[in-house]
Amino acid sequence: MEMSYSPPAADIDARRTRALVVGIAGLVLCGIGFFFDRDHFFRSWLIAYLLFLGISLGSMALMMIQHLSGGTWGVFRRVFEASSRTVPFMFVLFVPVILGMTSLYVWTHPEHVQADEILRHKSLYLNTGFFIGRAVLYFAIWSGLSIVLNRLSARQDTGEVSVNPTIQRVSGAGIVLYALTVTFAGIDWIMSINPHWYSTLFGFLMMGGQGLAALAFTIVICTILIKREPLNSLFTPNHFHDLGKLMFAFVMLWAYFNFSQFLLTYAANLIEEIPYMVARTSHGWQFLALFLIAFHFAVPWLLLLSRKTKRTPRRLVIIAAWLLFARYADLFMMVSPEFASTGQNLHLVEGEAVSHFFVHWLDLAAPVAIGGLWFWMFLTELKKRPMLATGDPYLRESLASAGGHH
Image (tube, rainbow, N blue to C red; front, side):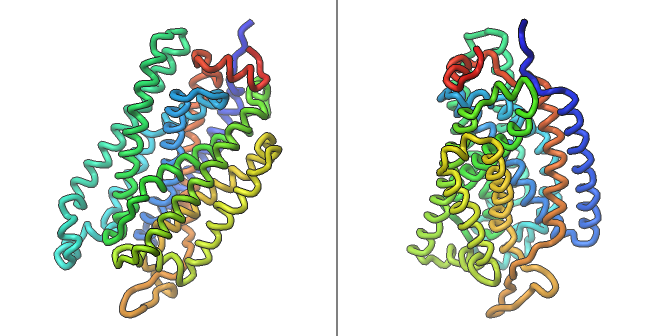
């Protein structure tokens, strides 16, 4: 008798309902915040949005890597696929970013562009119409890749082995397109908040952060799913060990990219690059910087050195959940220091408005809203297919090497 490798429908439906309720409650709070502090609403929405979009895109990238490389961690492919299918939904949630462009990006104000020579030179690229057009292009590419790869995967499950070379070719080209589009999206949506600053490493920072967020989320959701049959016999300690090793690698990559950016800025000592680092190492932000060094890198790195930790889901999931929070803190650090806060946090230093470290209640409400809605959509997609990709050519090897069933 053939076993259905799917999570219990009742469990998925119950969690979908809770996620939707949480998301709607968060939206109500964000709506209140919109009327009382519109500018901060858009900032908080952008930060939270980047976190969950990163999970979607990072999962799609990992899915393509798995198609190209194989490996025992391919048993998690259905989670990567379900996450990637949320990309079209994320386009809808991007609408507030477009509506809030004048609050987020100084280059949308003609008077600032006319008064700033650098903005005038960049105006061919940094303008409202081209910004929106590029965003539409990014989502068209990401959605197209997700749709094509998921359809090929469905055909693969029917036993159509002829799609195997095709899915690898699409994945190879898709990795290149992913790298290019994510780099430019990072430039558009984060780097251009301060249009005087630039970093040649920013694309790598974006991709590394998205890969880490996707791995951490996959560990969290799979740890929840293995509490019931038949998934507790499908996902074994060896499989989690693979994800733990990958997460360990991405933690080191994050530290390497950030340290390289800091070192290059320090060595070059260029006036265009220095303010970015100064803003994040002074006026209270230095404590968040130290927090990220310690708890986004050092502590998780030390904990993930343990083989036993990587093979024990109930331990690994704690680190994974913490790293999702650390990813949010890192995105908060990328965006928030560029804005001078209002009220008591606003100070003048040499005639310039300087933002001291601050956390607004919308910074908590926005991730609740977007996270609840995103998780609802993810679970909706997850229940559409069995958790076992039966057409995966590496499946037999994966289950055998992990001690599972053929």
